[in-house]
Amino acid sequence: MHSVHQAVEPLENELVGRLAKRAWSTIGVPSLIGGTLRQAAKGEDEPLLSEKASNDLRAALEQEILSFWKEHRAEIITVVKNVIDEQRPDFEAAFQERWSGELYDRVVMPAWLQAQATVMESIEAYVNDFAKRRLLNHEGGPRLLFAYILRSYLNISVAPLLIFSPTPDDDSDQVHYQPLLP
Image (cartoon, rainbow, N blue to C red; front, side, top):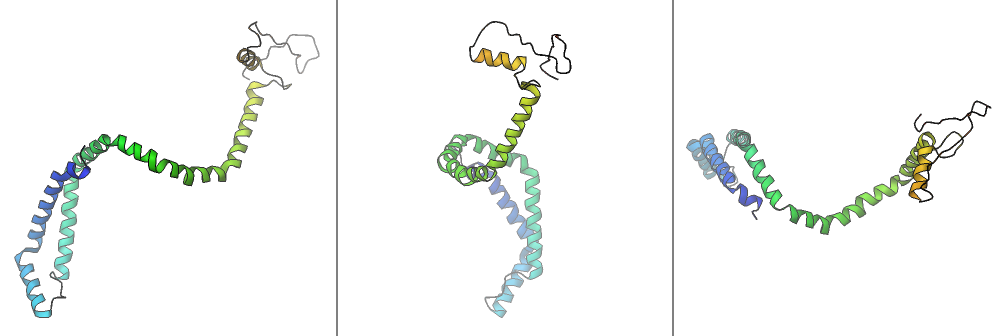
């Protein structure tokens, strides 16, 4: 297995070389000689580069790093992704051993305990509404499909199921068909 450092080392070396060349071209011999003379004349606490030279160097190095990233972004991401893919089993094992229990104890359980009443109330309201709309008829009895599922699942009977119920708005003795979905 390769570490990320080993995998990106060639790119890292290229970046260091580019930064060194850019630094030298930005500062050059005159800035180094001027800084050395200033240090010798004023004492060792004096910075080697003037404030202007230091700002120019910072800007040049930032620009070089951005250029390098734009040129090699896809390659760097691919290398890092490959290393992570190679080490995925190790990451997953470490997560299981070290972090999952802590994550559960410190994040999941406190969040659940804080929101449990609200979540359960919401679930109960949904289940009751679903039952009223889809599982129970207007009299509170099970709709045909629900009754059939219960009867089949509980092995009550294998005979066909037929439910007769009075028509809610009519006092006649007519057979009332009640669809499963309104």
